[in-house]
Image (cartoon, rainbow, N blue to C red; front, side, top):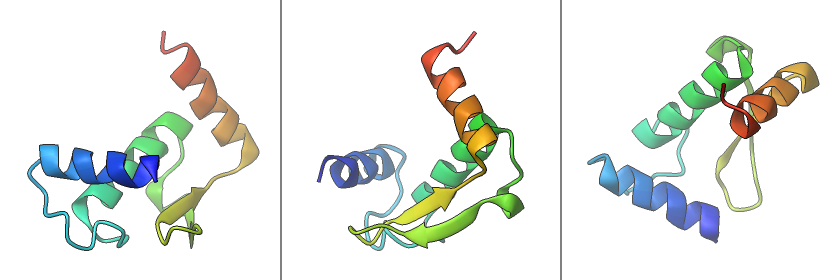
Length: 77
């Protein structure tokens, strides 16, 4: 429930509609994928998408790229 509320709050803060925030073509979902792409250093076209149990898009990247994104999150510099 926390991630849903976080996504809705972020969408609202950015001035996006909160209707259909769970759709992959919603601006907040596009922004999330852009962040994942940047953090994981992987082109958007190489990110695989699925759906989690809450109906939200979920991104899949190679393990190397996932580890890189975690490293950047933990130690940004």
